[in-house]
Length: 484
Image (tube, rainbow, N blue to C red; front, top):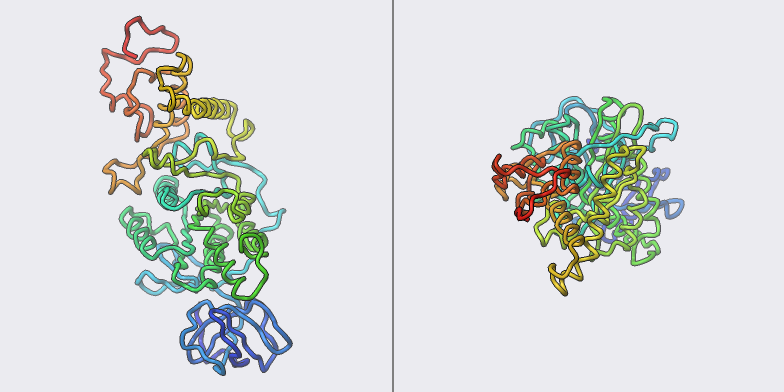
């Protein structure tokens, strides 16, 4: 936000400093909650969080407090935290104050808007339900996302949350010609720099906006960066009538920053040390993500799960806001099955016959049933071996393993590391491939032929199947002695 100190009136002095918490004694009327105060000459920006008495306010500093001292003058900036909105913000990287941090030229014509906005009214929200295609087979087939909805990526450290978000950005911009906003809450500066270079190299940076509150910044800054990104997304939805994909990495860091702010303010903690206002703070952010008549903000949020415990209060509260939950599995990642999506624990409220259609729904149920049967047989296989299973069970295991490998997919985001060109697969091709695998059309193909491919047709070339050995039709019995 742009501040002219000379235009800001002096309203008081610094009374006390405790870490990032600053108390100010006011000589004039108390400023409203969320007002930004500026200490002179140090320049710290403090957001008012409470009125402690008739003459004092308590706030949390959004910048460092090094050099701040008692008795310093405090100026009222005249309003809350603001960020720029306008067509010229695309292709740029911002901090929580709306300052560009990419070293580019000055912004063009922009308007400055408060980060504290009310969610759209129920009468303004769209009542139609549409599926949001990602081009990622495992998600589109088993965990369909909602246009204008919220999806969560649940997983511990190192299972691929950021890579999956990066791939969705690439697919949204390059294939659906939409606008993406990436919000990094408590992220490493290395990840922000890498994302910027990757999007620039892919030629999609002009359709992106990036907002970062890095992990080395004060908790007040990390607590507000999500509101700043949402304000920019609301501008494109409401005034430019565009569909926006909002990627949040990581929503747990928002809750964590709120916990730090609550602790600094001396508020009573609740279960496991989380702030007692966690549900309200999270709802205030999540309810602004909505589908209206003007456009839709579709949000995909990475959720760090402490110690892989899905019963952690932070994960539980995030679950209640989501229309789809994509759970990432460390076990699948260790087996090299990327994206490492837990196909049985992931779910979506969109997976009903009335929304995705009867064929897609029945196929998804058949896939889940096959994968669940294979999961139940894993203990027997580990103890006795595959040979001890009945022929029917061996068929189920072979079918499930081929299905698991078909649902892997090479990403554009990892092309530089794997050497495999990234692919985007349509929903029709995904369902066709899964259906053919469940009919055992690829039972005689090696499992490796289905691993890391796009559409099912690529398996034929990968396995080097000749015309002389066609795939048998499910209606045609396999001749005796044929290769298993």
